Length: 298
View 1: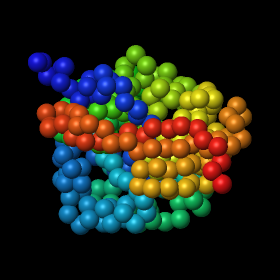
View 2 (view 1 turned 90 degrees about the horizontal axis):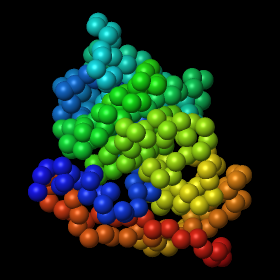
View 3 (view 1 turned 180 degrees about the horizontal axis):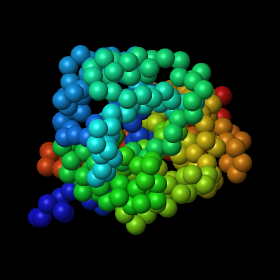
View 4 (view 1 turned 135 degrees about the horizontal axis):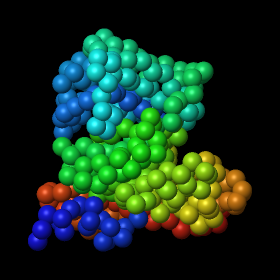
């Protein structure tokens, strides 16, 4: 069997499992420009590893945050200091700067913990495509063509980035500052997925979820968008969330036109049989989120 037929992203597409609810969960993001090469664990990358990495890990754990390294595709301005961005996806604001030393990066970590909601700086639009081949070959093989396609249309907004989680969903990217994550994106459809999202008609076929929500809420809001859209990603938002058990959550989805005003969605976390989750690795167990509309249970 050839490597192409055993790629985890190919196997996922053949299985046809749900993808909603798979976006990485984080409200705040620390984005650090680094030309590479990137270590398998991005915080082990030279220039990041050590006290800076520990500070980033601690801040992200405290703030429901996540960090990524990023770089421009195929070009790097000589002599220009790399940038960093601390982004609050809940409010669409950011703080940014440049770095050359560990102290500069520690200032970036401090900015992540600042009250970004009160920042007067609206975050720049960014498209971050996972291309980290040191984590999985699918991310590079599928991500780099997506990067190239998007960069032809939005050259100042597109970045390659480190692991977004879920190799099997490659190509995958996240839109900032809203934090909408997409998967199973390829060269022919990448530009249209972004254009639909930005025009307020999010393509739920490729939607993984809105990263600032839990997996169950991602699945619930996404399912309402799929059933009643097209609509903006912000047209579906959670109201009451009832955790019934470890595997069952009921979510009240509040909708803006054309979505219903209120929809109660039952989300079941279903353990799936072992399957290829990463290229070259032993098949592993994983979870999908199945949704169904229910009446108000109270």
